[in-house]
Amino acid sequence: MIDKTDRKLLALLQEDCSLSLQALADAVNLTATPCWKRLKKLHEEGVIQAQVALLDPEKLGLSLTAFMFLKTLHHNREWYIHFVQQITTMPEVLACHRLTGEYDYLLRIQVKDMKCYDHFYKNLVNGIEGLSVVTSSFSMEEIKYTTALPL
Image (cartoon, rainbow, N blue to C red; front, side, top):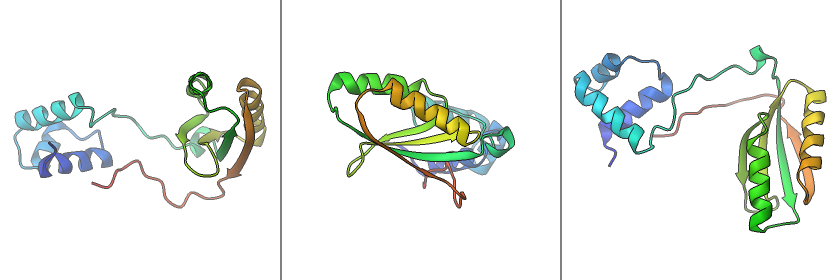
């Protein structure tokens, strides 16, 4: 069970995962060993899935963000497995969600420019059979972005 101290540790890590063990321990009023044991348990339980660096897409020349909505003609297991295999190998796809409502899937795509998006689009529609609607919206401005969960 996650208690108040665990939540505080998790909040601190969501802000800056490069904090030292001692800095984390001090922030939650623990010594290093009990703090380390809590962190180890959170990793083992899968609460902490990974510790990563968040990169600025603009500074890396990946300034176009697209949200792609998909409808499919197929809803069987075989099609779904093929779809997941294809999508997970496409580095431009930052997120893929299966939806309720009008569309079946939502993809978040990050690419350099419209030409790269068009190339991605063509690969997608030619590589995955049974897509009946593929429509996209392009982000003009990112107003809020966070990876931090509300703890």
